[in-house]
Length: 438
Image (cartoon, rainbow, N blue to C red; front, top):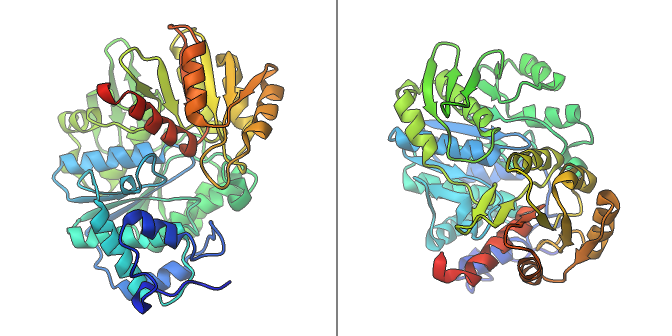
């Protein structure tokens, strides 16, 4: 494959805007996903970035975004200067790179991309690798003392894992990205466990623990903390409060996190465990925890649109996430549900649709806005078979949203789900249509 010349040699002088840069870096690698650390480590070494005081990795199948947001919020509440890197984004690329909770602006990111390009020397970095290196450059220039870095895929060979962590969280392990990580939970767990380091703490945020997690921790010499063994939580439903217990610290009377879903207590517990084992004790008072976790919002994760709570967005892009969404829908009480769904072709479609079947009355299939998307017509055929009911096909997402709005009663719920690349455009379309109330 012939690679484009670097910006330094003049080919990139026309790259003025962030969208131009993002389109260009997509052309540099023959593969969209090319797991491996060699390229990133080589360019990272040339960047000669200073190591911040603390680096935390957040890995796992589901809950990474929630854990990263909670950890970021806790650290900011305690006065740390935090760089937070997550993926993918919903509306703007800038969402991936935050400094003190604020997305980096276009100019800052472009400057960082130029810096990476100046030392790339023709290496075929993937889009994610290039962006990861740019984020690290942004964080150094910002003077961030603490980094929260979400693993993009897997762990062992993910670009983020080129950065040496002080500790990490693995939220849970379930089947997802099977084409790259393996077809069973134990094989996937080996990849997730690749963030473990000798003598460094790693928090496992689920009480369902694959054997590969404990085996890899023992082999690597990592200090493994497991939910239900080393830390736990309990909820007082009547009082609307919860309690967290760590190895040495107990926090009573905690306010519920603002992020929706019963599983968020599990995510929050893992974050508190990480802060305890890394001696961030000044952050761990009931008042500080409640204040930090009540002020959080995460777009696209059980997100309601409009005061009437008629529209609901949830990415639910794998079976584990879809099961959680189904449980949350069930807890709302019975109301008619129309689901607009778009998924990527490499996802477990049956695993996503099946848990939702008891909760969804009508289905509309669209093609997610991604080159790896499953065509809406193929998707509709599969959904109809799995749900034993018709699935409408719409060529465009706004058309599907308008149809769902017009053809459902006022008490019906309209759900958009299946992928970041469906939910993000849906959020954008809804905001454009309702701009007077947003």
